[in-house]
Image (cartoon, rainbow, N blue to C red; front, side, top):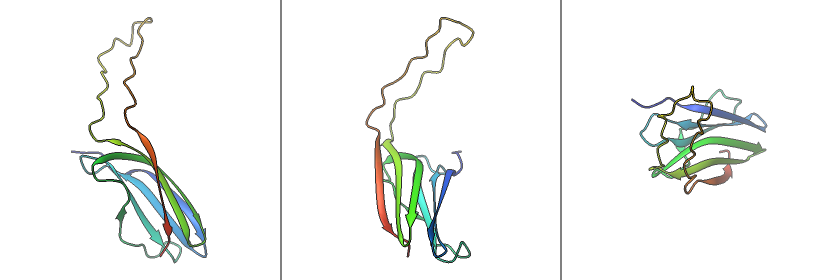
Length: 114
């Protein structure tokens, strides 16, 4: 019914530490999920949701250095305006309307790879 996980991002933190973050689009409201590894990817932590459950979140970016990590993503209200896609694409004078961006913002979480 919904999309699949997408936009997977990986970062190497040194000493075999890894972080993986992605859009989890398997729910009605996409969210950002992260997993970490301290042994080069042989074992992974349980998935942890970073984004607010009431907000549509996507496009994570990750960074890691030693034991430290940071994840940033775009987040907006879950009731984002719908785009009107009823346009005649053959009309050379057609202009595609753009809806308001709304209250989109960039979120950042920092932590330690444990």
